[in-house]
Length: 296
Image (cartoon, rainbow, N blue to C red):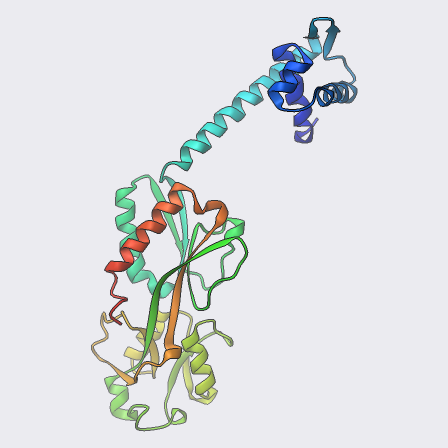
């Protein structure tokens, strides 16, 4: 026997419980012929009679009673499991997996700390890997993504905020090489992304407008690019809201439209309505109003 035959076992359990085919059919919401077919198939599969048929209904045999004791325990366990799952759906507990851009961590992590203080039983896993996590496979509950509108099926996408990047260099670098107003891009040293075809629009602009020979340093994270710019390695992008420790950085060109990226909140439709995800998404929408992203 396997889980594939659970419908037949459940049918036999209901027949034993109510004592008649018609009563079991009403309980299960099926035709009485389906009940009879399930009982006959189960008895044939087991090679034993599970019920004595008589004018008043069905009475379980000894073999039937053994099977039905097990079925009754399984039915109770399923009922308890359903209750636990339903209860968890109304609570902000367990684990919440969030995937985000690494560059947003200075904004996101303090907000998550506030959220966890409000929901002390919640455990958060923040994943800042560059790859695109598949929400449909449960790899994350909430994804914070940048760029063009995500178009994966069954995902619910909501606008979060717009991020503008600044193209900067250290004062030491500007003293030595000047700005882009002083020299063409081929005479400067740039800091780029490690991907050959980056998703971020500002790095696409860099690849399209700066020759490979002018890119002297590459990094996967925005924090590393910022440190490289501060160290005088070359010209790189930093977020418009990120002014921490950037007093020594100088803008070498006014921001262009291509340096802006829309940031999205993405959830999967199967999890979007759960209390945990709904509460966190609502919280982030309130928190972003306190972030310095509106005055970039």
